[in-house]
Length: 275
Image (cartoon, rainbow, N blue to C red; front, side, top):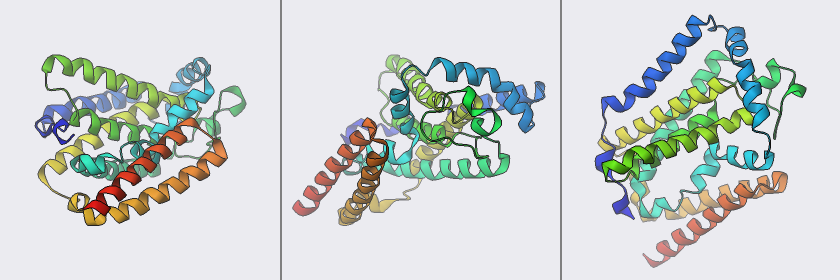
């Protein structure tokens, strides 16, 4: 499986960062031109789009609520725990990118303090799936940052060798990522630009994670099997958290994540015992 990790694909390239930075600049210029750099202007500019997306994607609330959980690091990373055994280099990039994305999310949420839709609008006028979030931490979408950070690392790490396949490969994965991220609007938790900016920041975080781990080995202990008991304890803790979530919300995706953690725990224990 290590052969699937194409390190030649993930070398730092300035052009790789150019597109997301350009799009962020375009979003800023749009807000400036529309006189929407204030909190009120930012919310008012997106009100119609928020209601449009929220209204027309509520046909399958249970499916949406499951899909939006992929923006939760605990859930998405649970599906990738087996790669610690087979492709530890991938986890170096995931950890580095995730830490960068966490810094982005915390700093920007604390800086802008934009109220969530349930606080800015009458929450009885739109669909809320799951918990009603009404704080002032709407911008950017943390779930979208997390989702695209992890997705970007996977996207570049497992990119096909043939150039003719790469364009369609990236378009499909980015398209799916955007659909999953937009579930944050569907469940009534974020505005569209919260999600879009979150996706761009997540993409940049994933790229930085890949580029940094190309040059530096920040997490050498991931490769050492003597730390497998710690991984097992971590997986066990995550499994307990998931069990409590299942008891509260009983989502199918929680069962899938729990199954992945259990299998990864089994493989780690087996390899550790046989070392």
